[in-house]
Length: 426
Image 1 (cartoon, one colour):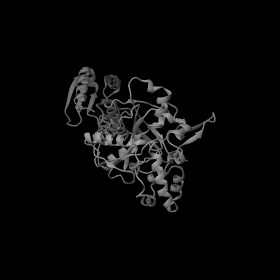
Image 2 (tube, rainbow, N blue to C red; image 1 turned 60 degrees about the vertical axis):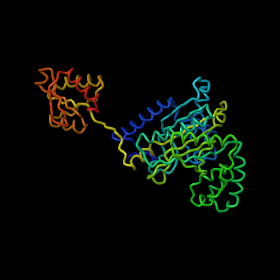
Image 3 (tube, helix red, strand yellow; image 1 turned 120 degrees about the vertical axis):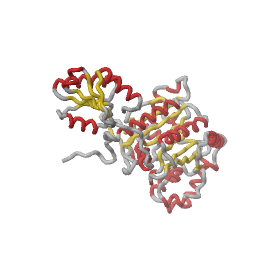
């Protein structure tokens, strides 16, 4: 019986993984410029972290988590998202005491959700996210949103749509909840079982329903924007003013509530044209009560997260080719046992110098080795035969032009390094 990969997972093979490297390098450069430091948290956490942090009535906690009992009879969950784990680390390691505030962190890593696999949506997926904890300034909200928009723009994505909302706070939500529940009670019998359940436990999430009938029934539901308190309204207005300062266009969507319970005030999503049902490629917002919920001092926070799989799908749909190559600086071709030994030494030396070099391992002849060099997309072939070995030289052949010239070993290394620096190599 052949063992196959589990459903909802993917192998990222050579030829594709280089795109991931390119995006990850873009992420790290972007975060460097915005002064976000990398944090790495465990792939699994105590289940309670996500129950308390994400919310017990969310789809993630109710339906999608990979949870198991370990040998210590503890309930453990593979992380379904990154924010709760980062906030747990922030509290546990007392990062709130760092003199540099707010604390600005980013992560890249695998997340796990048991949901129906489809293009760009996997059961194991890779998430890039940022968290800025320790400030309630709306300027920080605008910076976080601008950072996400800039990331996509630098990759060349077009047709982006930023949707923005405020989901209020513990002061203004109760009045909106009361009005919303009264409205939903009028249509309760027409709601599906899942949305009726949400009405009982977390009515705001009915507005997040994917059921077209529910969406139609609730199109005139009371808007949270009509109930914002004296703290939330000016905060939301300030976020908009800062985005206007940067000429970042946005659309106010009062139905945007996000799928996680920890959001307060600012909530946003970035959509992109052309990828069907998974048009949302980034989401985020404020979570001013989450640090306290997880057991720390009450500190405000904001962040976003995005799936690299969805990003790659969006790039593919828009026909954007990432500038990646997997070619070699040089392929060393040897003829004869003595030349093979010398070639082995050259390969090792040139790799130490920083060149990307390969050689033959199948005892092929000159023609076969040159074909291998072409398959590896080598820029140059370094040929060592009996004559070259006797003179202490190699023949460097430009595989694009066919031009070739003899060089002493050290000179060949210097030439190849120069070509690499000038972009002629890989």
